[in-house]
Length: 158
Image (cartoon, rainbow, N blue to C red; front, side):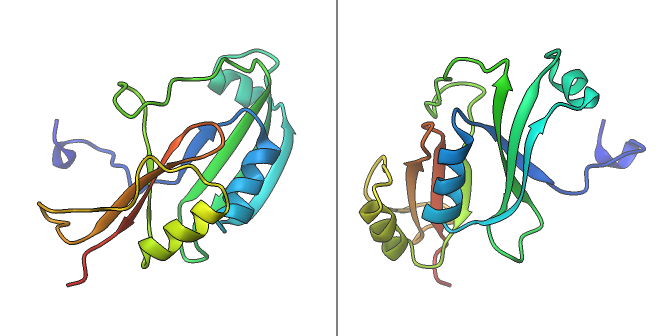
């Protein structure tokens, strides 16, 4: 069924949610280390709808939402399951079902150096894109405290 033949449509991405092992550690990483703007904290979320949505009875969540920049509509939501926490996940990028978050940056090399000095773990040094529509741009993967893959992307100068 194509978008033109159905009666509904998605309008945009609202947020990306990441489950984390330690919310305070993630708040420091995304807020202080990466410089994202903490929009709100919601501790001890235990509303009935959350149990229904997640499928875990009596679930309790601690939640923090960030904006990548003051102008972004979408948010990054980090969630710690205070009750019903699961085991760590294999976040390798070659595993079906895993994802990564790509962040645009205007000076990747400078950002890379700054984050490396702050102890952020990277998969590689910055890589120049040598083919395709982003040829001439730069990319690099790095990790949050739970091993979730983040990507920095500097588009090519046109």
